[in-house]
Amino acid sequence: MGLKSRSSNCVEDIIVYLPGKPVEELERELGLKETIKLASNENPLGPSPLAVEAIKKGFSDLNRYPDGSGFYLKKALSEFHSLNDENFILGNGTNEVLEIIAHAFLDPTDSVVFSEGAFVVYQIVSQLSCSKMSISPMKNYTHDLEDISKRVNEKTKIIFLANPNNPTGTSFGELELLKLLEEVPKNILVVVDEAYCHFVTDENYPKTLDLMQEYHNLIVLRTFSKVYGLAALRIGYGIAHHEIISILSKVREPFNVNSLALLAAEDALKDDAHVERSVASNLEGRDFLVRELTSLGIPFVPTQGNFMMVDVSDGSLVYDLLLKRGVIVRPVAGYGFPSHIRVSIGTLEENRRFVKDLKEVLK
Ligand SMILES: *Cc1c(COP(=O)(O)O)cnc(C)c1O
Figure 1: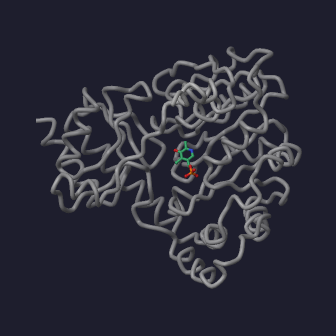
Figure 2: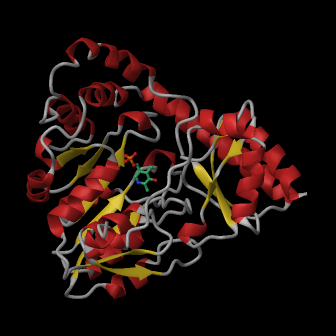
């Protein structure tokens, strides 16, 4: 029909994000039982029970549009973070907040800086805005903040940083971030995506919300998809100076976050017990994997997140072999790591199963 060539030039270049098949379908195709999914860094303990309870209150109002302002959740967030309502923007997942940021700030003549092995959505949203990209090589699996800072020029509008980064699990500290914030002009947005902040144990982890008081060009992103266990509901948020938030608000669709997600997030935020349980379980799982992989002599990248990159020599082969055994992990060749797989830290039982099958596959 000749319609293919009619798509926007920038959209033409975008590589479609390929999610895995539904677990039920995989089980059917491969004749598997008892598969375990360690592919998307989800909370293996499930959703916050308080959030599940809260959603039930929303069922009878499904005929109504959601509260488009997210009034109660923003109020809860502003108390939780000791900030004001006007410092928050809610999104249909942090992914949507990233898209809103790109849409609101980027023109085709602008340039964006991020790392080669950074979360793939930074590239997608930059391409959607037809912007140029300056891609910084990673150093020892970590964002090279010095190189990133050197790449900034008069065309640069946004720097995207994931801390910890997905898929590498590495993080940077407060001093490194401060140096970058000092070096780059104050009219360049520095977006720090903290989807995994709850799992970090490095004591040098930046206190970005404090830094924001001085650096008004800082945007911090958080999500309910990871430690709170609400990935299915799609809800995340951005925190920034109110001037940035009011620009972002022009781009946000009026009812972008659904009412069940709003209710769930509000109560998940209060569920300290679930957060503590989830963090403790993750630390235990992290220690277990470190111990087991070390004793098996399998190299891995030390992680600050709820997932880990393991060096298996041939990532896509080992991914396939594990899949046939019903252990679903993520190949990361697309991020520039062809010899690794990324495995989410699961329950103790899931972690044991992963190590056992990995050991057999690598034999
Ligand atoms: C999982 C993840 C998110 C969360 O995205 P949602 O759209 O909120 O589910 C954000 N950033 C990174 C780096 C992630 O890995």
